[in-house]
Length: 225
Image (cartoon, rainbow, N blue to C red):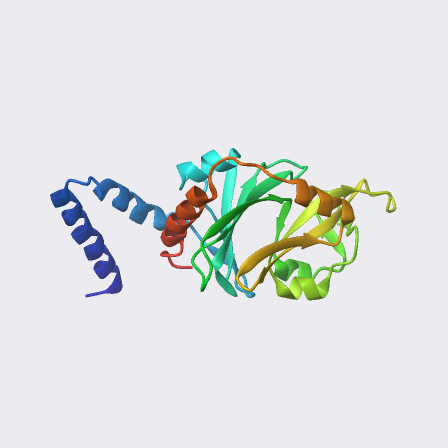
């Protein structure tokens, strides 16, 4: 029997047990199985993966309150996820959640964080010091910290006003690293440091976010990519 048919058999058996138990779980399980084939996970050569999950979670939609939601992870830190709530606006004034699932000697956690423009570590590593947007290129506000970048699990870009040349703005990098299984977020931009420190949005409980990310990650990572 093939792996695919074994997977289907698993769902059938679970559904049968659910019906006998009067739990009514069958529709939910079958919906999740169907959704897993709808979502295309994109991974680059550095092991950074991302997938849009906007239509997959009512809870995360409630937490984000934004038109587009994505989930990212890095194969160097399998239990760490970044949920990005994308405003789809030119200011890239986004937020999200760093979610730590079960790790050795650590409890699961979810932390609400400010996020700017999505970018991969791989793309920053190959950057010449300028970031391309729709119409033109813009400079970095400060040099990319190559050591911090090498140690990062995720990265994000924040727009900052500038007087560099004729550019109305520049970009600062925010680095998200993992230190002893604890996610840390930092930047070399002093103004941005204060913003990150003061940022706090309590939409839903961290436990609720963590549980939902665990469920959704099981769905999207169960599909081939």
